[in-house]
Length: 203
Image (cartoon, rainbow, N blue to C red; front, side, top):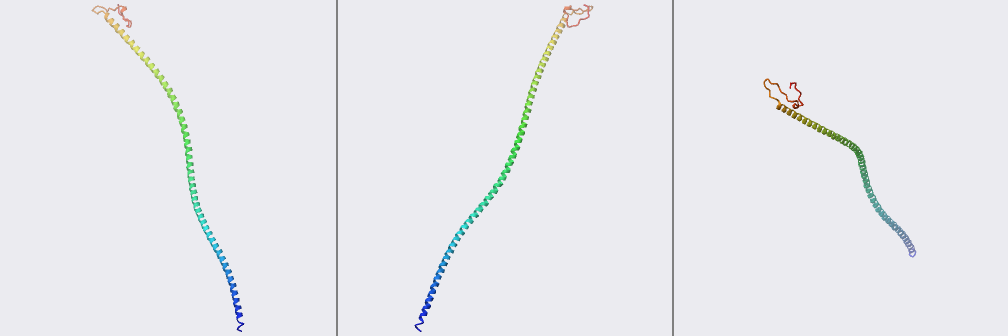
């Protein structure tokens, strides 16, 4: 019996060793599988981290682009407001320019009418000046003629006065003195003044 017992023991040991090898092989396979899965998971995690970093970077870029877009939007709104302001200014300036053009045309029309009136007044003044000069010339001629007539009349009156004075002197010189009982003696007819009327006295 002592010789028969070791064989089953060895057989059990061999069987146990075989099982252990198989389990070891399985465990190694499982370990390799787990290692492979772990490597894949690590790779996927690394890729996922890299992808996450890329996504975060892209997200940052998108956020920066959104901020830039918002700034551009505000700038566009500001430019649009400025455009409306300048458009209103342009319309106001255009309206003012049109109004000033109309006023300038009216002023030019008024100036042309005023020039025509001034030209008519100048012609009228020139005609009136010519008429006044003609009247002055006629008045000077009338004054000269009147002065000459007055001078001639004065000269004639002076001559007549001198003639009367001479005749009176001659009469006084030739008149005989009057005595009592004598009648008045007249000078000869040749010595009597022609301007005096004949006296009804006997010669």
